[in-house]
Image 1: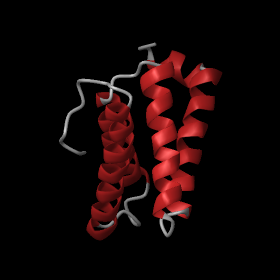
Image 2: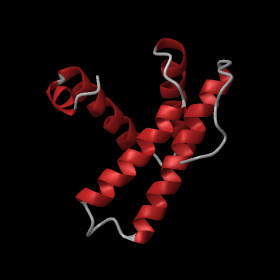
Image 3: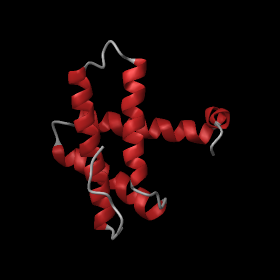
Image 4: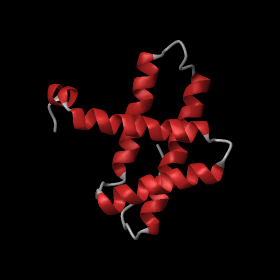
Length: 114
């Protein structure tokens, strides 16, 4: 799916976007519980590696897109300090998710974060 209008009309894509944001919400709500965060992100990583066969680089792309949208849609709240924190969070998410890829034997995972 490459047509932006088709993407906007896609209920499947909208549903997946909700799941992605719910996963991020779970991560943020549980930052005080590193085991829960690791568990959630390991499940996401393993599902995308084994079941969906998604290339890990797409998590890096998603991180960049999310940071861009946050900065464009909420400029008054997305200060340099907030951007730094979200960038660190995206790096941690990428690290955990790609760690799960490595655990299941995925060979090509980039070591650089966001």
